[in-house]
Length: 376
Image (cartoon, rainbow, N blue to C red; front, side, top):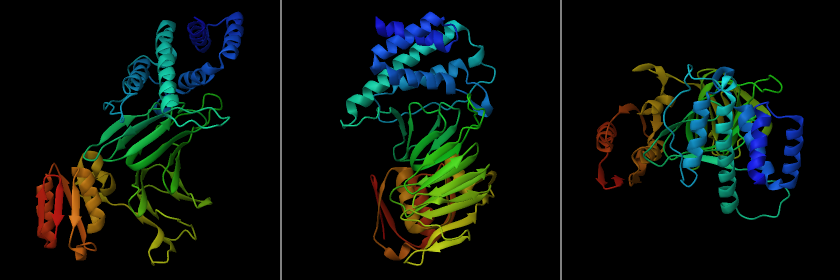
């Protein structure tokens, strides 16, 4: 009974309809039930921080769908969201009737509680004074891609075999996500309700962090690859290397930063910034090129349009991409092929079609048996 009363009082507090006596009662109930504190914080963050693209509030129906997705997919290893945008004609959050606000706020309370239960059940038990932080994970399997919309309205396209993680209380002083794999981000501009300042969006990867305020860019950070790439389409991003946090690299539109995936160190701001012991550059800055067949896209982002693209790519770097794209395993028995380069774009082509084209261009033989490809 006390929990139901707590959620009711929280809802009228957030909708601005609580009396001083109700606010005092809510404070007392939360002190008496400290286990509800984190859930209440999550709901407050969802309520206070839910604004959409270009600073507009997110429609109630849209936010309700987001909460419902969380509730429906808690037990699944990957969240596959539908491809949708916020309807500009839909009723906006700040204009929603109180009854609607109460309805989805109660849904939010239930979802927050469910997420916390899942987190506490499956997280390792550690002796720590800090409160656990619930998180959401969106992932794709090899051979599949997905488009999702985050609670702030940011659009994210996930390439095959990729994972994106963000905290349940996603919108605060910063919006932070962790990426493993490849993703294209179209980040929404949103402002803090308290300060009016733009809320930064930060992507954490294995070796670099990327900070933006609102822009579109591609990030490729697969654990098994030697480099991490950031390609900026529009706007501005600031890249920080984990091993040299005091140095910042700011990218301009149509620039790509490639960083070695191990112990990268900034030495200067030249295109070839530093060299490792094997004479390979620690970091390079270059221009990205538009694809002549589609001037609205770059080679780095054609995968978003379901086009498998290679631009002067080495064969050994192409193979993992083919494995992820077609969900197969490739065995290379001819080591001399590794250093060969290839440029090409394949749209709606089977694995056999792609292998035929590559073998004709580079003079090798191959065999496909089920999910295994052998090249010699």
